Image 1 (cartoon, rainbow, N blue to C red):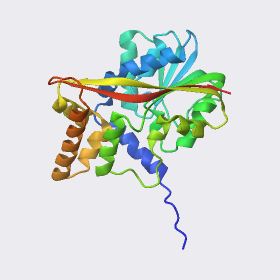
Image 2: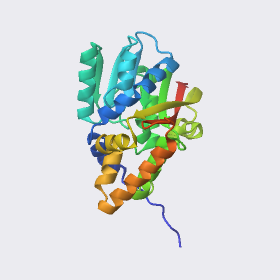
Image 3: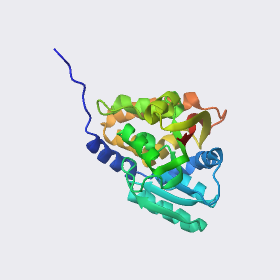
Image 4: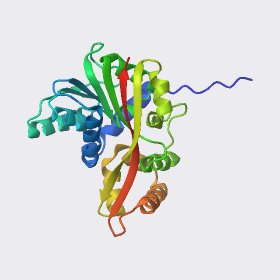
Length: 273
């Protein structure tokens, strides 16, 4: 008897993801990781005047970082509310960024439209990973660069997702987004379309007033955590909160009542063939 592998409904998964990222206040979470986008733009070695696309831009961290370097920048995301936050930030800094609604798996741009394509903790969550990788390549010109930031599987954020997954499992058959956080996974996704790929493991640090402050902040503002709690009854909510608290206390390196937790990520710069 042959057992067929489960084929996930990627369209339904994407719709749920869209609702998840639109919930809470991701723009507040994004404010804590601005440094990651600034570092990526330096690693990519952006030049003024380059055409830059930030895919799954959210409220525009990488797009704004590129605009500060006088690039011609477009940011694309499928959550309109986050795009509006990005427009407000650009206006406040008098930066010129074209924020557009669009899907990482079907980018609304012609082939070879950009010199540099960026994505920070964004494209890694696309349900159809092969299609998303193909789109990044398609819109990047030959000889152009693709700069990516993704969580690594064994990071602190990786542990957070593992804990959430014990209470709210991912759909059967869906490939882990942490594939993007490994060099081997990226080489599989991009195949022979790259002239080069360099990867570096880096660290950013979460800083909060206390473990309780962190938990309340993420439970309110970070869509995946918020939705995990919403899906559970009271006893399971308490269990999830206890597991997350144990993790952050175990990871805390502050030495005082505050919370200082490092988390590793993979920063990649690839050149399209």
